[in-house]
Image (cartoon, rainbow, N blue to C red):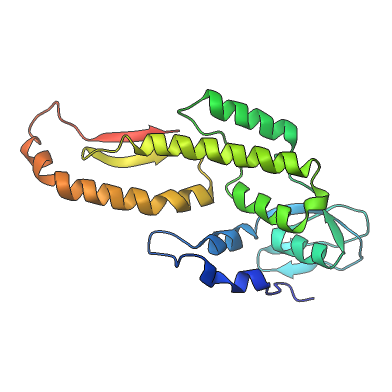
Length: 214
């Protein structure tokens, strides 16, 4: 078995903006997410696999096993397993998260660090294994939109007295998207506000601030 088969979609990196020193391309973030583990129900018998990330298996038909996401997708494509949707990827759980996100504009609810990439991969390759797939997809999209709105609201508070931005419980893709904007904005604020800041540096009432969106 080729443990990491090349996919045509991964070779199409050129369709995405080239990564800068501040962020990764979307496919690079997705590639990292493929090392997250997920449950499968195999339909084959196979000895354990000894991989760099750990040992997985042995595999027996209809007995659940935990494997990296990339391996689960490779087996799914060959019709050798069913993928078990993660516990957080249910209508009940996502509805609860969405309500909490809307009710708490200053906080982000904890979600898997790669929830965006994992859900996208499962929608692309294992849609038939996700109960209420279309509703789950819609809920995840709503959660993303609410979270990005809160991120924008927090970044609007940036000023030349801001020296750090704290945003907790963000996902990998969310961090990757806002990192270049945040870094460049802070650099510009420092550059244009440095003279004014130094003029007031002796004023004990003029202190740099930290933006925190938990």
